[in-house]
Length: 237
Image (tube, rainbow, N blue to C red):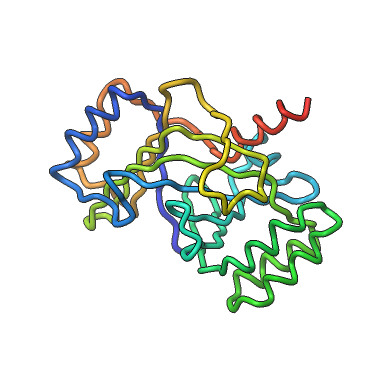
């Protein structure tokens, strides 16, 4: 199985401006970009035991998350993804999923309806759909929230490097509104705080590492899903 390094940092506007200025001549903008950035909206799933949430809280290294993701609110290009983490490395499986299948999943949100909702996955072709179908039936895997943010991304073929600035990260429990052009998302971080992600294969090219490794940046563990679930807990209190 193919794994990649994924380092994360909390960054602020002045740091993003500095890094952007240094990176723009070495790397190219991601193809999804419109006017420099694009919108990512994801539905995250968890099971009846909140296993994905518990594994993050407990620091369990070998863990998996299921999500459905769209770009720029374009309902013609949606992906089902399984993201795995093991020994600090990440692996992602993904497959195109139809709007009709997603709609079937988000219109049956109660735990009791998980097996019924899972039947929509059988309309799709591929092993990933069968895997999620099995989890929805055996573990009552179900959609729990939406995470939305603006992404500014740079890519470099050497080392298969991808550097992203994820800004204005927000969360919503209104999963059924996934196809709305705009949703009300509650901020998950303090004002002005954003997330830098540095992803690459075995080695990060030295000319990029020197830019990232300036003194004020410190690597951290950060999960958008985890912080989104904290918002949900606060709303339920």
